[in-house]
Amino acid sequence: MTFEDWLFRKQDQYAHDEILAFLTMILGMNFFIGGLIVTANVTQGLFFISKPPLLSLIGFALSVTGIFVLLSGFFLLLYYDRKRAWHVGELEKANKRRNRKHSIGIIQAEEMLKERSESRHSE
Image 1 (cartoon, helix red, strand yellow):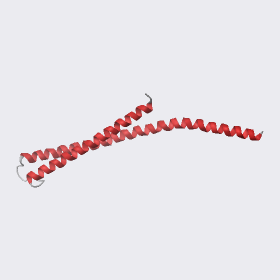
Image 2 (tube, helix red, strand yellow):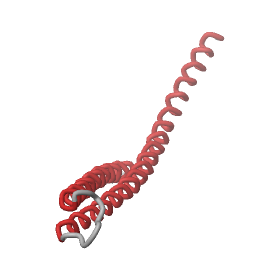
Image 3 (tube, rainbow, N blue to C red):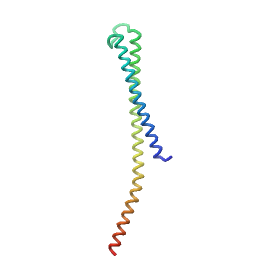
Image 4 (cartoon, rainbow, N blue to C red):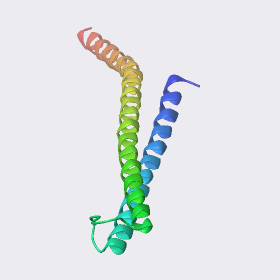
C-alpha cells in the first residue's frame, strides 16, 4: 500500500466519521426538543414554580442530555473535519509532486524536439 492509498483511505474514514458526528448532532437535537416538549406539557411552561412533578424532571434530564449530545457531536464534527482536511491537503501535495515529475519529463522532451528542429533548420 502506497502513502497515497493510505491517505485516501484515511480521508474516506474521516468523512464517514464526520457523517456519524452529524447524525449524533441530530440525535442530540431530538433529545433536546423532546425534553422541552415534555417539560412544557407537564408544567404548562418552561419554569418550575414549586415542586416539579417527576415527569418534568425526566423532561429536564432529556433536555440536558440533548444539549450534551448535541455539543459533543458538534465538537466531533469539527475534529473530524479538520483531520479530513489535513489528509486531503496531503493527498493534493502528493499528487502535485507526482504530476510535477511527469510534467518535467514532458517539458524536457518538448525542449529536445525544439532543439532538434532548430538544429535541422540551421544546417
